[in-house]
Image 1: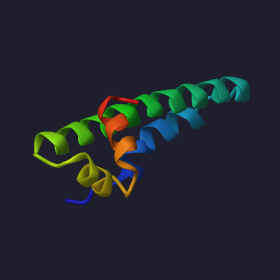
Image 2 (image 1 turned 90 degrees about the vertical axis):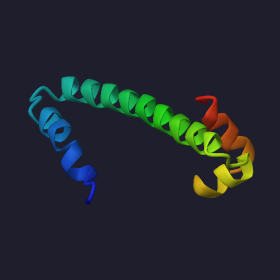
Image 3 (image 1 turned 180 degrees about the vertical axis):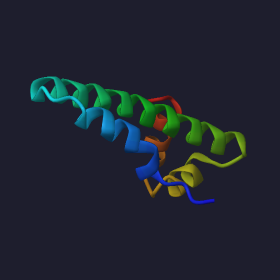
Length: 80
């Protein structure tokens, strides 16, 4: 099964484009940006904690998470 982020984001895209007042659209875009940052932080934390729960060391977690430092992987695990 292919996961399409474009398809998942299509409703948000349509919602934002439907806001005709451009200053209001800008505010909504910023709200969406904040919401995405919270989503990203939560997802990275879940991945880091899940990999640790699977017995991976922080160095291995870091490699799996794109080659970040093991310190950064640990921070992800703490939700930072």
